Length: 405
Image (cartoon, rainbow, N blue to C red; front, side, top):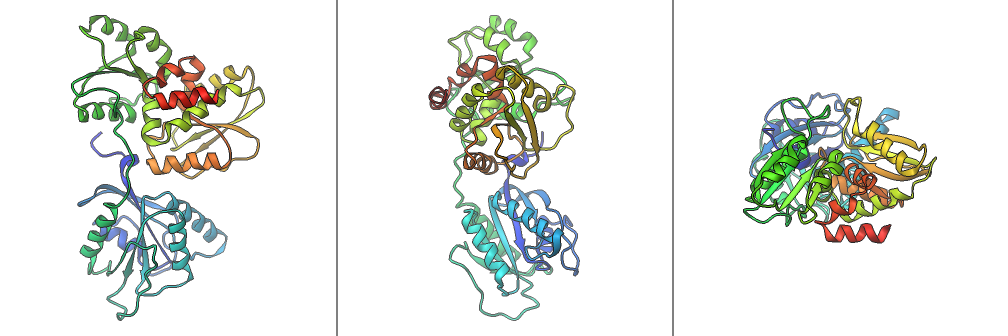
């Protein structure tokens, strides 16, 4: 993989009324015609995403949204979609038509402030409007006058965006933070099955390799078929073994108890969300009974494989844990799921394609509904009886699991 994954990029949403010049601004920032522009209001109907390098911030995703003053039945749906995108963005640019400040801009600013999404105001079309008094709410990071069409003020806008990005709190820890010493050895056990993309590895495996390099660790990648033999050939024990959740039982049996081991899924749970909450969610799965409704929640849409982990393997394991048939429902996509009253638990995917902020929002969404949320790998480890083994490198999460049992 040659580019930073979307799930590790800063997401910047562009918001405002129809025809304020949001799409023109996205194109100006991207340096190419990403979004369709037109004098006709409401040209942008669905969100448009553009991955790019934004100096000096680095890799970002620009998200062009529909106007927040859209009308009609479809318009209300577009507004709802835009609101959801804004709520899960890392930061936002509120685009105004010159110095105009209406109830729509005030509502967007209030929503961003309530969602704790930092934002700045880009007063667009200043080449067409005379200078005048500009409204700048207290919650706003700052404002700048620009013309996205002519390029005037764009350097000032980029500088302000970079300055705001530098203030963002980032509690993300490296994938292998504290799990292996500098100069240590990490063994990654990677199965090659129908879920493995041809000619490459899946994202969590690639990220683990990169994290090893960043941590100055040696990284040994082996197929599960050859793992036991490799263990006997090593002159010394590895500092950590990480495996795919689907082979966790096999790897645990071949790994000495003195060697710490976990799964890629547990690493992603700690990297993208609150591991303690996932651990409590995993403990709740043991209480499932036949007939209970469980939601399988995925962050991306993909074509299910014959042995798809979310659509086939996880449901089968959950039924086995419950001792009977379950009512399994599915939700896929970046939008937050809506939970009905009958749901007893949620099992989420590894969240490799969404940001930490987005995953935390999903955990918060589940907590607000008083629903336990585990993730794929932790559900598998729980069903296989090795959950405590894979949580052992994370003492706080292991404690949370035991307390919730």
